Image: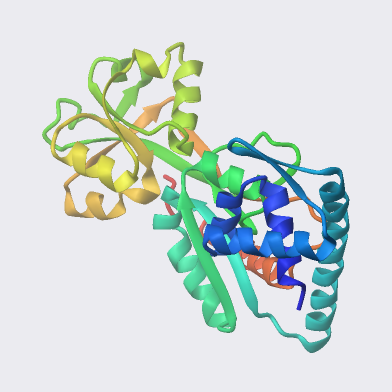
Length: 304
């Protein structure tokens, strides 16, 4: 219902990037540029200053953006009021999740949720924790689910459940007969790490710091971008690593990996992250309520 030109302008102004706006709106960059130019022609003035590879809002552009914010807030409130009265829960929710959560927690959760609300469309973007938090900050996703602490006080962070991390080794590894491994012992073996920006890596870095070690004291032989890649490398005997216990259940059953408890133990939060908004979509309310119930029921699934 809202003016498409104004929607596109609002997204570009919020992100200050035609490229990012095109990605957020699922449009081509030329189409985004065309919509903004049409709005500028309508007002017969420039809304953006374009210099080199940067764009900034003109004074008139800033005023239009302020009004656009109010217009879309009222539009969303109107939609929600109608849905509350009719009882409908539909539309589109855009979620973002860090890799471990997307692979091992969300499939069952979202499958059960969709069975209750089949008219609701859910889009999922998968990335590391740092990028998911950035997407929430830029309002390109409605809700993020991440696997590391979030320190941005402008965002709402709600705990889902705690996740236990354990050391993993190949059964034939020298540590394969052990039950527990200490921080100090990690320095003595080749280590396979997650990439920079990963929530798992951030938590592990802080864990080693508490034990008096930098993560760079480790003999890092590989940095990989997913739990699946790390499990494959560890299974092949290329090194040891630390992963969520939730991510290794199949390998433990097959006997291709061995888990060792960490001394001291290590846990990290799985959390929902969202913008502090004056309103929330009814669909998001229902998803959050459903997810909190799911997290309570499954809180101890992968903890000893």
